[in-house]
Image (cartoon, rainbow over all chains, first blue to last red):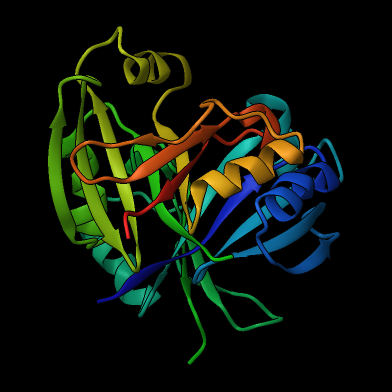
Length: 135
Length: 135
């Protein structure tokens, strides 16, 4: 069983301002930017070693991320951990009484990544995402 | 210039309860535990790929981490990014107008790691620690 941090997601009010720190000052390479109109966010992916930092800028105050920013302020939103077998891991978590947000893995259309979320109530306060990369 | 996520620190009300998720259920290897009476925290370091997750349990409500838990609740506290040359990086950050919490790198007695903190005002809301490992 192996794990790695795939990415750490950060909610920011303004992507350009955030890039001033993470890219220009700290010097993390910008891997790519992405507009996600369905989720109402603009995203920038920064490389940091074998992981990424994902900057999320809401484009709509009433969206999920927009409301999060309004309620909690900017900062770390979730950590995504890559696992070998997400279905087996979800079963294992349920056997340990861990509360999952998704009943079964979801699959992203664009890249085939399978993912699910674990409820912060079960993790000591952290929204945890799991990824299984396509083989 | 290289970077990696050295660790992600999470403030938890109870270390045993947190280990039930991070170690027993998710299966991250427990690298070590540590008592830090000066900072009034008990710490557990979990391995996740080439990074660590650091669980911080305050042992004193009036300590820095104790007050943080009381005010913000459990969750992600800071992310630590390893850099090659911390002094050069601190100069670079200052040149970009970034606000540092420490004027110069501090050195830990037990392992020689040099570290400093960057103010969340400059990072879009994230407390960022920098590490330079001893060569």
